[in-house]
Length: 283
Image (tube, rainbow, N blue to C red; front, side, top):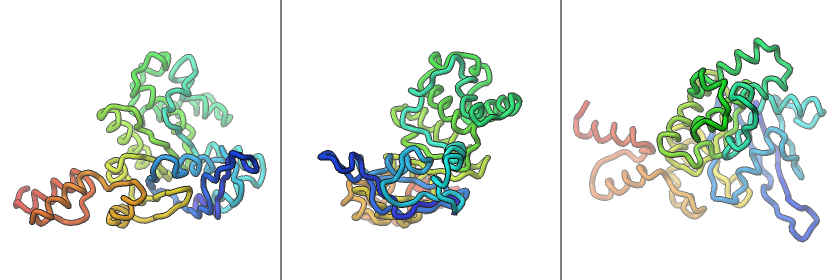
């Protein structure tokens, strides 16, 4: 396993009147190259869980293992992990602070102690991966559009070449075009590097289009873990957790109820179009 948790538990404000168990007993593992989606209603523990995976939060109980070793084995191990497991928070553009986009993207690689030549290469490579034009690198990040700021912030994490990239609602607050671009950037990074990707999202459509495995969290526990087909086939169980299957899956179900023969494993618009064209004998 590349990254793993054993009986992971986190209690906020322990032993105070405000004590709250955010996650409990989570056993999780991810292999190199997996693209995993994490879904769950607000307050289900998603953000608390992913904040443990690079040592940002320390567990109340349980273990986090990376390459088979406890991430708290030593201070050096914990520090090194944060370059190997990159975490992109919601609205990461609010963390931009440098004078230029280049300096912002270079911040992580610089802290890794890399040479100037390697830092510049990583900045250019990361900018290309997220679709930032080279002429933007010498501009202030605060002059960029909202979508460009988001891409610059994500590039800053990608520039560290993490083996695991974790994104918490990476498309939140963006318009449809911006969301499409960010998802394409993430997919591009995955294909180019073979890194493990964990993506938290409230959009079932984004999850359906990008991931091969889905984890469902509810009330601080990991209640489901399976393929896209397995998870979205359990519509009733998801509904009980205030979750839904993709809208196109619901449309396909309605069409089937009207007597139109469509497969049950339709989770994206592209799959629906293909199924309808095949039914009509189109090309």
